[in-house]
Length: 162
Image (cartoon, rainbow, N blue to C red; front, side, top):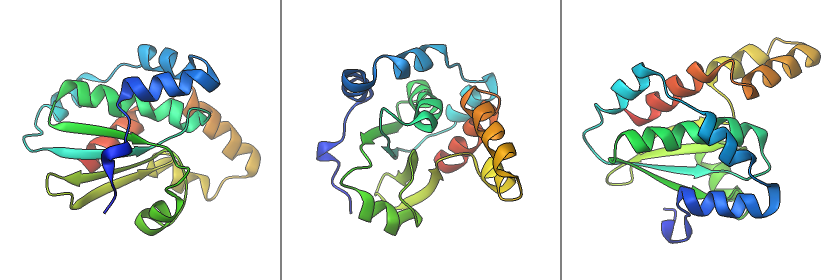
């Protein structure tokens, strides 16, 4: 089992990220809003869910995704979010999800039994990228990072939480 004693709060994660990479994560967080549907769905969470978020401040996919998990936790205190770096947890990530990619968000029930995982990008985009040319893949990733697929981020996160 993973030791959460070294996990950071969102505020600690932001402060650490800001030291090396500026306030890009702060700005993205402020600009991020949840859909009304997501707000309604997360309110249905009646039991504690722990979400362990493996992230790094330099990662553009993390910058796109992290605000959503944080905003969801702000809608329901039953969602407990713990932030950890990828560095030092590579073996755990490889074992848990089969690869060392960020962001990786793994959810656990109140007894720390695994519920689900979100790895790097929404599943629908990951599947779509398989058949794309490298140029089309780059375009899709850029659109994702610019917010075109925020609905898929919310959908996949809710799926591993609820």
